[in-house]
Each structure stands twice: as C-alpha cells, then as structure tokens.
Amino acid sequence: MGGKAGLVIAAIAGMLAVMFNGWYLAKKERALERGLIKSRVVVAVRDIPKRSVIKTNMLGFMEIPQKYIQPKAIRDPKAAEGLVNLVPISRGMQVLQSSLVPLSKETGLSVKIPMEMRGIVTKADTNLLSLINPGDHLDILLTLPDLNYSGDCVITRLQNVIVLSVGEDFGNGGKKGNFFTFALTPEQCQLFTLATGEGKITYIVRPYNDSKISNIKKTSQPALYERQKVSVTPKVVSVGEDSKQIEKKDALKVEKEGK
Image (cartoon, rainbow, N blue to C red; front, side, top):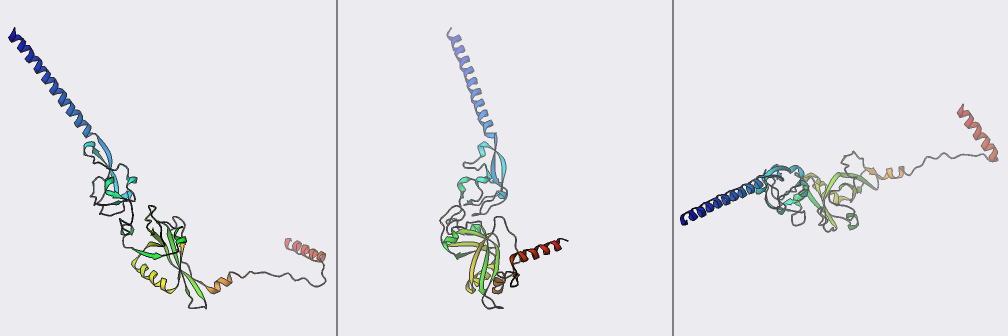
C-alpha cells in the first residue's frame, strides 16, 4: 500500500509540475506578445543639431513595439513644434518631451535666427512694442534731409522684416521691454546701423501673411503740399442777376447737354 501511495503522490506532483510549467510559459508568452504590440511614436526624419527650434517637417512617425518605446516619448508632432532640443537628435531616434524646452532667454536668441541672417537688437518706444509681437513683420522707414529740396524726405529703407523677440518675449509670452530684435542680412545690418545715425526711424507693421516687396518711391516735401491742392472752379455770378435767372440758365444748360 505504501508503495502505491508514493507512486500516486509522485504522479500528482509531476502533473502539478507540468501544469505549473505550462502556466508559467504561457504567462511569459503573453507578456512577450504584449511587448511586441506596436504603437506609433514621433521620430526625427533627419539629424537635428543641439539647440534647434523644432519644426514639424523635421519629424515623422514610426511603429515601434511597446517594450521599446522610451518614457516621455512624444506621440503628436505638434507637441514638439516651436520647442528647443537640449541634446542632438539623430535620424530615426524617438523625440522625448524631457529633452525639449520652450524658447526663452536661457535657450538664447541665436536659435531663432534664420540661416545666413543676423539678429539686430534696437531700442524702441515701450508703447509701440506693446503692440508688436514676435513673428510680426515690419517695414522700416527713414526720415532724413532731402538732397534735392529744402526740408526732409521719407524713404522705405527695409521691407518685410521679421521680429524675433520683444524684450524677453521670444514668442512664449515672456516679459516685454523697451527693445526688440529682428532678422536682417549682414548687409542690411550695416544699412540699418547707418540709417539710425542719419535720421529718424519709423516702424510700420505689415498685414499678416503679406510678404510682398514693393518699389516705393521716396516722398519729398513738395509732394506733401501737392496733396493739399484741391481743384475748384468758382461759379461767377454777374451783378444784378437774381436767383431765378441763374436757375433758368442752369436748366437750359442741362437741357442742351442732354441733347
């Protein structure tokens, strides 16, 4: 009897071991399958150097197994647009929220300057700058003595100039001050610097999305007075003519013109 009982116990123990092993393997298999289920994440479509302003055309999507998706991985490109990467991002790498920061004085202004352009800083009236925001476009006018006439003239010296920052506002609602920065070519920087020493600078805000460059002639002092001239032909009434005679003449004149 004792031997049979031992065999039964051994058989049961073996069956339990097989069952437990099968359950364990099934559990690992299910975990592996869950890890291989793919999800879409945002990746770089090209190498993005450190301290670049992220644009949506730098990013794309990739299907990656869940087990390989990194913490803080971005799922929507719009969540990264306009932010600055603190570390380089190689092509195909996941874009992480933890490696991106908003534009600020800590990131520096240089990250906003377009290639082959320069950021020139200038002071302006605080009341003016309260109406201007980063991203606006300006025309810059110069008032200076006219070489051909007595008095001053006004010329449009630069057109469609983009504002990079206003005070510490880089486009993220920072504190505005009495200075702002806009982007110019190196040659335009020289021209603007010379203009500030020669005459008065006026900033004109352009309509949104208007980037047209026009050929605008200078305005001299005589043109100012020409606009004030009004062509008026006075009506002469002879002495002694009463109102009825005038009305009769006017009626005859209209009748003739109608024929």
